[in-house]
Length: 169
Image 1 (cartoon, rainbow, N blue to C red):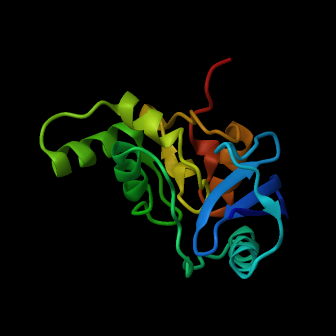
Image 2 (cartoon, helix red, strand yellow):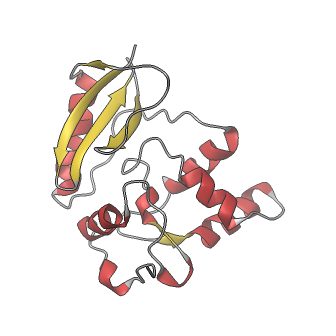
C-alpha cells in the first residue's frame, strides 16, 4: 500500500509518497506520482518524518535522513542515484564529473548524457539531491521541477546560483 501527503514548501507543493517502510517518491505540484498505483491520502509516521526533514532543510539546515529511501529504477539508474547521495550539501558537481566517477567505478567510459537521463528519472528529488548537478561551465540545466526550483534549492544550501550560468533562451 502506498500513502501520500502534500507538503506546502517555499518552492510550491510537494507530494511525498511512501510505503509501509520507505519513502519512495516526491513530486512537484505540477507532477503526479506515476507508478500505476494511486496512493492513499494519509499522513503516516514516515511522512511526518519526511515533513520534519523538509522543514529543517528549507530553514537552511543540513538534516540527516533518518528514514529509509527506496527509489525504484533500473540498476543503472539506482547506481547513478547512489552517486547523487554522495554529493555534499552545499556543493555542486557536473554531469561530466558524475560520468567520470561512474566510469571509474565500473571501468570503461560513461556518457554524461546517459547519467543525465538517469538523473532525470530520480523519483525522490531533494532527498536524493539531483538539484546539485549542473552542466559544464556552471550551466544551470535539467531539473524536473524547473530551473527556478533548482536555483531556490541551491540558494537554500548557501550556493550563490547567480554565479552559475543560466541557460540561453
